[in-house]
Amino acid sequence: MISFIYFDVGGVVINDCKGNDKWEKMKRDLGIKPEDDKEFDEFYDKYEKDVCLGKDIDTIIPLIEKKFHIVFPVSYSMLADFINRFEKNIYIQPVIDRIKQDCLIGLLTNMYPKMFSMMTKKGIMPEANWDVVIDSSI
Image (cartoon, rainbow, N blue to C red; front, side, top):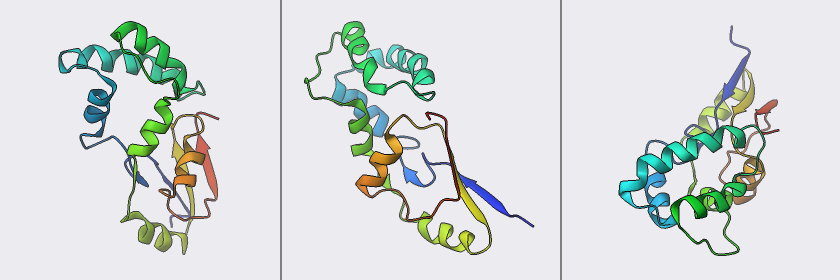
């Protein structure tokens, strides 16, 4: 008998930049040219590892500016930009509600620091009393 189920956040309990064109759109909005996509993705992947372990994503903004010759507005936050692109997964709430009747539930995620609280505040996280939250950024 199953007694506990973990849910991933990105792409499961919320719709993030996976499986859609949001990441490509974000790069264009940032000023990344299509011919620089591969270089930017490799650059981003290199730094994202540290972000998933607690480094603030906004600390890479000056590095992006320098490497890709982009100037961001002073108030720009990459974290807020991501959150603004994420959407509620309207199909997951009934699944969570049903599973919660028989099992303990938790989140297992490698999201960025402060992301969970910002998504909750925005109202895109499902309503659930999670029994456990394992967040690699904490």
